[in-house]
Image 1 (tube, rainbow, N blue to C red):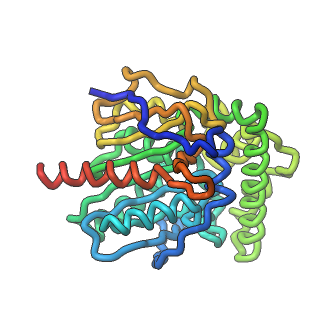
Image 2 (image 1 turned 90 degrees about the vertical axis):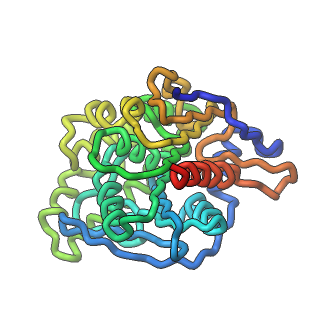
Length: 336
């Protein structure tokens, strides 16, 4: 049976507010130091994906997907890789196109419904490590991509566990929520970063002589006046991908419609006070497949979930809960 339960997470009393939960890890968490190895994968469309490995000789590999305007350098990715390593897991963090510190070589970007690159990485790992168990974790946009990928019916997906955190399950609702109150500050920062991403990519394509791809970005026009995700997604995502408009993009890419068909044991962690969303994104139990455990917390912010009783000494609860879930699922897989 699908499960919609109350999470065991308890926020730190000194961070007991959705914005504090959201901002503390982003602004004040030191990035963990890890020994990692970068690998570059060359895609069939003449581009590349950079992935960052942590750990060797794995008993299992965990793939990690970052959120909007994030990368494999995001503190939540590094923290999870460190914790997984301590539990004996190898992990590999995908950088979505152009997010690895170097612009990619085509006009193609990434978006909330683009599952092709995740599938490309999965097929690469399955070919290279045919007998190694695979799991996958996604955050925010990466969580939406993950859930859509699991549920859209691709063939031969062999993943023993998945976890998704703070997922914008209904993109239209989340875009509208970002236009309200304090959340506009998050929106404005993310839009600045996305516009810069396109600007750097445009300059890079001109520099390497990719005139056709450069022209595609140039035809998007001046992005500076765009003030909302509705405007940005309507101009950029619908302009670069085969969507008729922003409404079709949101309708086809929102992952909630795919939850019913997920066949992989999946943990979804969501906070009611997430400042990027409204209560309307939360599904009913009838919308969940029998493989989903949907843990709903009253608090936690957006990719926050910071606990701890001593001010200034936080515990990052996601890095306790998710590895425990992965370990449990791996044991069940090995028993079966």
